[in-house]
Amino acid sequence: MALAGRGALPQVTETPGSQRSSRILPGLGHTAGLRGVLVALASTAVFFTVLALLVVRSRGWDEFRAAFFDGAQLRASFPRIADAFLLNLRVFVIVQAIVLAAALALAVLRSLPGPVFFPIRLLTIIYADVFRGIPVLLFVLMLGFGIPGLRIEGVPTSELFWGATALAIVYTAYVSEVYRAGIESIHPSQDAAARSLGLTRLQSMRHVVLPQAVRRVVPPLLNDAISLQKDTALISVLGVVEGLQQAQIDSAATFNFTPYVVAALLFLAITIPLTRLTDWLVARDRRRRAAAQVVA
Image (cartoon, rainbow, N blue to C red; front, side, top):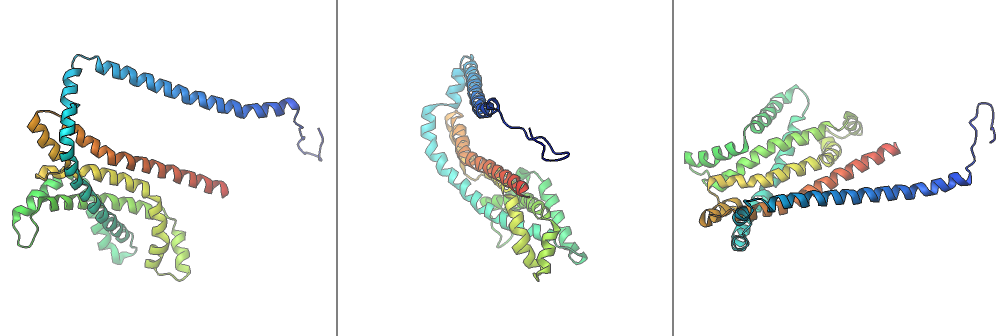
């Protein structure tokens, strides 16, 4: 032990025993982590095994399996339901593209400053409040049956068109709020710095604020995309033959519920990858922010 000066802390020299302990601790941490993983896997396996035994040994299991998991019905109905499910995917892709563009424009209009743009801001607020407050199914029914019933010349009468339009209108209201949260999360100094460099307000919004805001809201945008993909099944209430409607047709023809399970599996095949992608993006953004804080 040596003192570097008055009030200095003592310099402690590591002994062989302390060096040996520091070498052992990482191994102990790794072993503890591996033990925790094994315990988690074992407990999960035990839980689901017990649950499966309770279900399989129940008195109604045979009837339940025949009604929901009939192999012959699954093989027979899968091609028809999968073909109809392609309509769900087309509606999802088209409506999602419209929603992303329209919602961004709506969020930008709502962020316009000054009393001159107050009427525009008021209209965007009313739009978001009204269409977020109406249940999606109710609005699909209102447009899908109401607009064609008016028989206005030159207006489309397709139930599919108006069902997709209703989804686009409602989800634009939801997604615009996501964009607005992203825009408001950008510090005003970013816009001020851009304006001081000679950029106009529109240029600052386009080149400085929006790129940062959109990156921040990608995970919630994907969550809304997952919800939209599932809600494409709502157009079935208009008589449009998509995945769910085809499953209902097959189920009514065979008095078996297996077609509904087929439709559910097709929806899961789309939503689960999107969900995992969302989780990965959230984790990556969390790591990036933590690294930025450490550097700062």
